[in-house]
Length: 608
Image 1 (tube, rainbow, N blue to C red):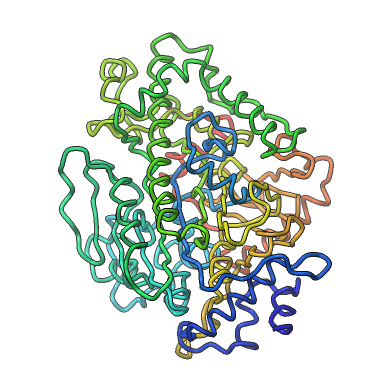
Image 2: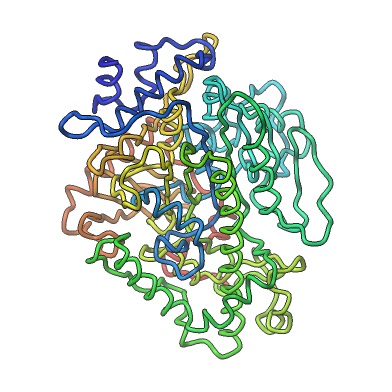
């Protein structure tokens, strides 16, 4: 055991997977006996509980934990009560106050890249998910090997073992429920599409939707490998259906621990929720987004979720001041936020049902629950929002006003106005898709009552999405394989942060790079550098910004002119990391998506 602990705690190791070949040789996808797996799990758990004096305060559980991974969609850092929101999320908050909150957790700023990093432990570019997977396009020729690239192909390589495959090999039953968004949707090759569906990628069972979003009342559904008719019954809601199935998965009688990957459609558009939830917030947002953002900011400081000296950056270019709007715009726009808040409260209720069931069946204490959002709050609907369609909607504010009673209903596909997203990402700059922390930083909550001692604590260690899977595997007593059936697996970028569960000083990663649609960032310790790219220009012309997040948590003050040598150091580090994790290291953004995402806003251009 001493050798195992020494190897895992070696700060020079980038990931637990690096030690697998030397200590526990792996050939098959971690086909360990339950006894060996349990021994490994106990070792990792003992490691997590060592104090600075070398004493152990906790006892490893008698068996591997159930693992529930809950992923929300387009939910900002400030949208959950325990992270400063006024939105009622008592069940999520309970997980936070009985577990841990991490306030330095970064994603890939958009759905599929984050999810690819989440389940593989690799950067999204490494596993061909730099961009959203292709949809309604022609498939590559059959002669092109599955998962062979390029980095934007949306085909995860076959030699990138994922967390479900690794857990399956360690004795787990594995369930994927909800949003997948990790497979191409070619219009002419369903067989190739299905090669990347959950059932072919380590999950025993799948029930959910394949694309980025769907109706919550009449969703497009797949069960295992079969397309289902759209539900069409009064009172149906997808979030409720998914949690019902999560409960059933937990209840399956088998001598195996469970891994449930629960990826809800909320709070992505369409904002579909019964009227009673919207009515709970009637009048709550008449104050507007500017006052809301300030209130959340003050609440975050009082909770300790952000430092007391954090500065609140000014309103972004192109976002209207609430007080500049007329009465009609205020009335309509407030209703959007009421709908969004009701949607989150409804989602919280469903999560509460799952937690309640775990408690009633005596499984909660030894269930590891990880809760996160895939990216910051969503700005894609622009200044006026989307009512009939989330994106590029032509519905006028006058027409929205005439049909406000339909908000949250099946005739709408609502996405709120961009400044609400800015409030959702308080105290950070920008929104989903952007390289600033408003795009990448989201809530991360970890609950494991049997093992976590400092309940309600806030962890300030830096964590990336790539670290989630190695942490789940370490908790289960296993790790990613180096080789499977003689096939060398792609290197794992993530590292377990399991030791932080009982230590606020345990070391985590120091460096993480970011690239999405030409926008770039690099984190090194508390330093962070960001470069915004203008479409059609040379990347050498990009202007880099520099932030010291130890003193400037919200990235409010650019220090590039003050520390030019540090900027050059960070630029070199970005290129080094990009070349290590991506081929090519930088990818020119798609012109349509660049304009659709209004990235020119960074250069003083605000499209209609």
